[in-house]
Structures are given as structure tokens and as C-alpha cells.
Image 1 (tube, rainbow, N blue to C red):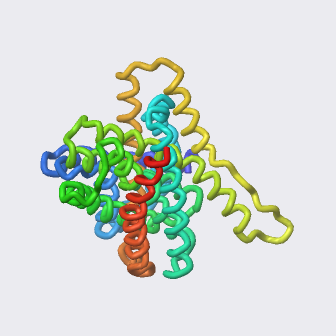
Image 2 (image 1 turned 135 degrees about the horizontal axis):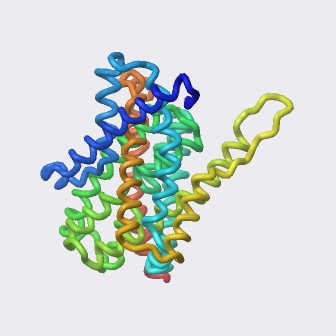
Length: 345
């Protein structure tokens, strides 16, 4: 990929993806788009898919390794840097109720989605795990983090992300409607825990909390903190998933299944610790987070560039149905789990 004869083409591929990522970030800042709470990551994958299905034959194939590098290696770096968005103090502020709700919702939703997807809808394991990760943990970022562990094809990650966009957007509008209609009987903090424990994307959590109680409210702050707890749970989830895949994946005779610990997951946890105990100015953290957003957008864009519409046909509507079942579980099951946990603790 970076050999003397291929280096220039690889860098051109990386720069090509970067241009798309810049465009995605710029589009995300447009007033109408910003009002919809669409993150650059989502816009990036859409731009990538549009390119893949219109212009990809007009771009030199030698740039391919650079696009792959953006979607694989830069992705791992971005997940590591994501740790600078979280501190151990923030996680402690969630309280035991928020932690328990997060653990229960992540574990039950992931198991439910994986089992139903594989057993009842005939989805392959890669797609089922990616779809389940998107709904159970933290949306598109979770799909990106899970992809290197399951080693799925790019289009499968794109499908999983599309379910996050669909049902996360529905949640942004549905939760405020149900709350204001008096269907959700919760105080502000409990409702915040419910939102943070069940809504897909971080941006969607922010929008949902603001849609009910306004920006900066107790409900909104509680929701974001609980959501950060779910984000952190991607690390143990991937460790367990990696162990499971290593033990269940068929290997050739004479070989032993390797139980690997994804280094980027350990790096993610390490950056949380660094961010918690080493004094770093807000300005530097802001720069790191901006770089991280850009790298994540590049990774999503590269993922979209490897996604061809004809591949979606092989999966059919199964991922939409499975994600829909998980959405109902998050909404209904999450409501009763949150109420029960808060009442007990």
C-alpha cells in the first residue's frame, strides 16, 4: 500500500476521501441541515454512497488502497481519539441507576437483535452483529467500531448505519410527542436516563432531550451522561464479541483459534484515563475532538465509497425489520427497565 511505487496513488486516495469529508462537515453546518441534527458522519456516508453508485468508474482504481486505508486504519485511530470525549468523572456522575440501565439496555438489545436477525430472518452474522451494535450502543460510531472485529464488508456497515439513521430519527420526534402526551410518567432525571439509555446516536440524544425540556436542562444533561456510559460499553462488548468469534469461527486443521484483543479498544479506554487524570486544556481537547470528527467522517465516507446499491438487494428488508424490533424493545422495554431500576435503586 505504501511501497515506493504505490505511495503516491495511496495518498491521492486518502486526499480524495478527505475532500469528501470536508464537504460533509461543511454541509452539516448549513442551517437547514443543522436543524435536523444530521452529523457529518451520516452526511459523509451518503456522499460516499452517491459517489460509489455514480462516479466510481471515473476515478483511477489505483486510488483504492487509499480509500481502504481511510476506512480501516484511520477508523481505528478515530475510535481511540473518541476516548477524549469522556472522563471517568462524567461516568461517575451518571450514578448507579444510569450505569445499570445502560448495561441492561446494551446487553439485552445486542443479544435480541443478533439472535432474531440470525435465527428468524436468516441474516449472516456480520450484518446481524453490526445492526445490533448500532441500535444497542451508540449508533454509527458503534457500527464503525464493530466492523474491524467482525471483519464485515463495507456495504453491511452501510446498511447497519442506515437503520440507525431511520429509527434514531423517529425517536427524536416520537419521544417528545409521547412525553408531552403524558404517556411517559417520569421526572426529569429519570426521563433523561431513559433517553440516554435508549436513543441511538449521541446527536439524537441531545436533540431528543432539547426537544422535551430545552437545551442545557437537567433532563438533557442526564441523557447525555447516560449516553456516554453506553459509548464506553462498546469496549467490553467488542472484547466479548471478539472472544466469541475467535472461539466459533472455523479454522483450518492444525491451527488454533486466536482470541485477539482489539488494540484500538484498549487505546480507547486508555484515552479515557488520560483525559481523566492528565490536565489538558479545553482548547486542546476541542482540537482533538475536531480532528476525531474529521477522521470519523473520512471513515464513514470511505465506507460509503465501498457500498453499491446492488449489494443491498442481497440483504433485503431483514435489517430494517430487525432494527425495528430492537427499536420497539428500546422504547417499551427500556421504559419499564428504567422505571424499575430507578424505583429499586
